[in-house]
Image 1 (cartoon, rainbow, N blue to C red):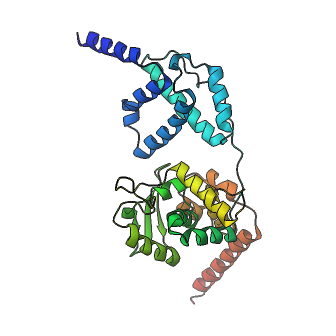
Image 2 (image 1 turned 180 degrees about the horizontal axis):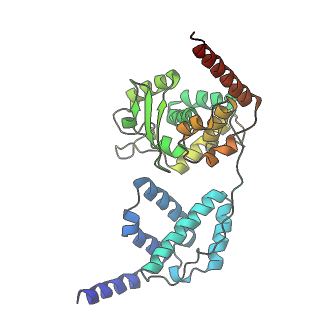
Length: 315
């Protein structure tokens, strides 16, 4: 009896659910979606809004693989990584629909993803100074500047910096205790005197709420973090107003800081303790056979040899 009731209710939902937008809304009420981390939920919603924008009024069972492939090619114009994320999450929703017997095919299942070219663009010291000077000189952009400052200094992802909360920032000890959202890696990082000074000022102005660098204007009395889209748009606006190169992107900050550590001769293990990478292969693209790194390595060996010799001589 219960099975029959459930079956009729399920058929009722299916009969009411016709469009791609209906399917996405049904997915949002599923256990699959509810079990995701909060950040993942926001990311999924962001990418599924793109899907709904493209196919929202289409009957979800009538979207063809050809249409899906055409949409993917259009999304690629906004960035290969972006297009891959939208395609992956869209495919996941259709896979859920097939498991629930709502849909019979997944039009996104067999789309061949493009591989993004590895960017090598880095910010110059002058770029950093111009960007921060502009932001810190205008309260409307100050929190954008702080997000950039933290991402660059700590070599962290923008996503973690825009969602950074005061409970992981210890200004007395000048330490950051961060659990990275992407792979749950935990890193403990020092806070420089310059950044501490900025954060002390920031806490005076925004310490009453949870986010370190929220959007400066509350919505309904609540301060919200920058979305990925808002942060990117604001960043591009600052770059234009500050006269920076159109080639650089906010996402290049982590690469910039990591590259600078490599050029300073910092070892792979030490770099990984900052970036949170667990696989040395992820760091290798930054490693170069530079004079600086060779000089650092040979000098360190030389100093170690001298220290060992003195110990052996009883000095």
